[in-house]
Image (cartoon, rainbow, N blue to C red; front, side, top):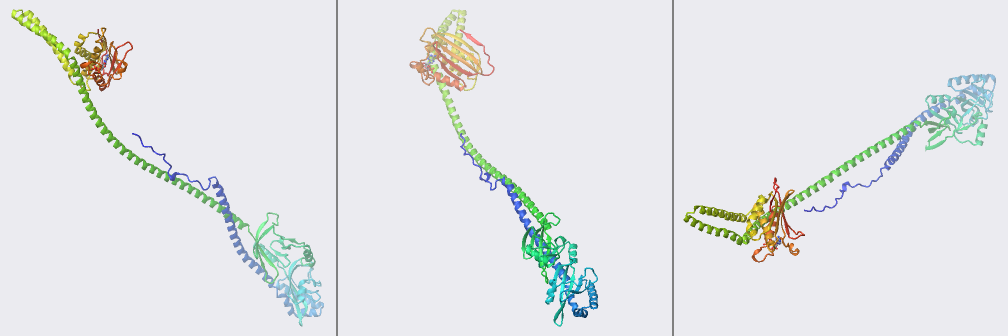
Length: 632
Ligand code: ADP
């Protein structure tokens, strides 16, 4: 049975590998870029939020400290106008004299002490200081001409004089508040109060605030950091420098610019500045918030370092990058696990599919095998029946062959039996006569001879009966006995056709029915006798020996042999060259089929030195003696 051809099985679609969207080598690069991107975004968001918080806080500080500055100034704003109320002041301006001056000086000193201002003084219309609270001090303005001071000029025009400047003699900074004193609707003099604002700077320093105040010229007049004081927050050209120097507002100060290294405007009143470190270190970044004071053309600027904001933003950026890396790692791990699970699932499905397919095929094959088995059984039954009928036919044929042989030999047998019968008739007649004569001895001898003759006849008929008997496939045979029986059976033929018999058969027990072996031998010997009958030199060789598990028995004659043209038909049924009734053409056919039925063989050979040789091979029975027996 041929197995059906199976087509090569394709991989299940679930096990085929999808092309990757991202080559695996690019994943670390991608994760790195993502980390950088997210870190940057987190940094910027954090920095923006930090700056907003810083700005809110700065706004509050700015309002607080700007308010403090405004109130420090406004606290003294009324003071110059008080001089209008003092009669001695008006008298001195009208009639300058030493007693009047001394009186006003004393009064001014008392006022200055009570108000906490730096100095209070009185200027006449020409701009000369006529009385001052510090008249006793060495740095007293008494008699000085201050007509060039802008606050004097403003006050003389009836405007409130406001001025921040350095003293033209001592260089001491101060804020000047001037007021034109009126008498009869006319300005007769100017009252001036100088206050110091350094206390505010100290307060800023204590609060660790970085702040400065720049005036209308853009010059820093107050600063928590002394290094920034009297620096210009705006670029200064030479003409501007010269103008500021001649005004003597800032004494003889050499101005330097407070220019940031970088500047980024965030809103109308706030910007990011990077200022050089006054101690020579790395530049420092600040959030600069500016507030214009209410009554002054002054800008209050608060500097809030953004270092902490940036440090926090860096931490947040790094945290975000690490979080992204962690997330990416988790995603990669999850994806790998998902892939492993998917592959496992696909493999299991493929296995189940293959299993189902296999089971289906096994079921189909089993069904197919069952059908084939049934078919084979039917064939075996048919064959057995055929073998049975063949065996029966064979038996019938063998029987027919035997009967044919017996028929062929019937003349000889009749002759064989006739001779003793004739002798019996003569002997019995003689015996009667010898008994009548009383010659008992001769009669007894005759009866003895008769007895022997009857025995001889009995043996002939017994061997004929045994030969004619049906045999089976099984059984066993002794070679010597079979050769003896065949020769005995053919004795009459051998007497009529004498020949030289060469017998060298080792005795052995063969796995074949005794009578069947005898029949084969009879057939082969009869053929040899027939072949030799026409010639005078007749030789017949019967040889037998064990070879392995077989017995090889050969029957050879020195007859004319078989013509090559006829050799092919030798074992065909009813092939005979014998004339008339002599041959049936069944002897060799039957002998060959008897040998085959006993798992042996019968073949013809044609020796070069003439004659014919038939080789009979039959299986041995276990434990066979193998001594050759020679009868010449
Ligand atoms: P039958 O003896 O009835 O003819 P066989 O089958 O025994 O049938 O023999 C077939 C033929 O084979 C014989 O007619 C004979 O021509 C030939 N043959 C058999 N044995 C010999 C032999 N020993 N020598 C020559 N021819 C033989």
